[in-house]
Length: 98
Image 1 (cartoon, one colour):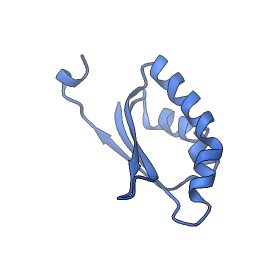
Image 2: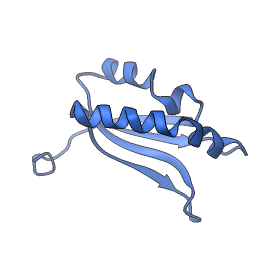
Image 3: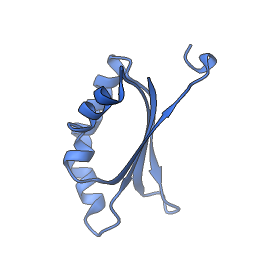
């Protein structure tokens, strides 16, 4: 199943510091998801000044439960970076999957 994950960072003064503290671990996890073909696309969301304020990921997991297991170990979740997380099921046209 395909899902769009939108993680919005906290807006407090320490938000960027928390993000940077766990970013390396997050990127290692991204590499693992790409290797497993579970991550189709991802991007950091930026504010108008170009600072990172969140993330968008388009993923492929067997089920919502499997996605939730991943999120329970995602460094931006465990490191209190993402203050608000939206998960939306989606359908990706085949042309984008080739």
